[in-house]
Image 1 (cartoon, helix red, strand yellow):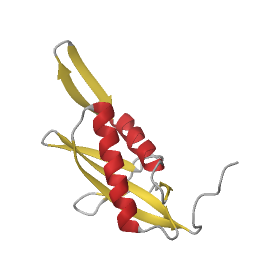
Image 2 (cartoon, rainbow, N blue to C red):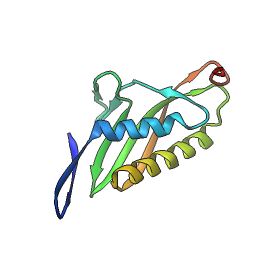
Image 3 (cartoon, rainbow, N blue to C red):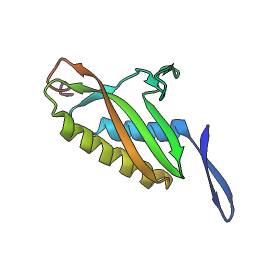
Length: 123
């Protein structure tokens, strides 16, 4: 599936995978996040919906605005409210800037904790 937008010269279709990639890249820059989680999301009825491996981000359109769900793992010791707020801001800004799609909400799901204090330094 993709999101369609129209201009005077024609149409533009942006894949949900592209939006997920943008969101995932923005998430990688947030201090405290160990990585995306591959856990499946459930719908309103509680039925698990399995997406293919690699999909930790789900996007839905509501009234012309995107609602994103992102599932992440955090490093041990991360302050969850601060990390979640930073993640929401960065993902929303990145998606809106790169695609022009308005993002109304970014739901953060903390799926797990990595039992190290932070990522190892790369030399």
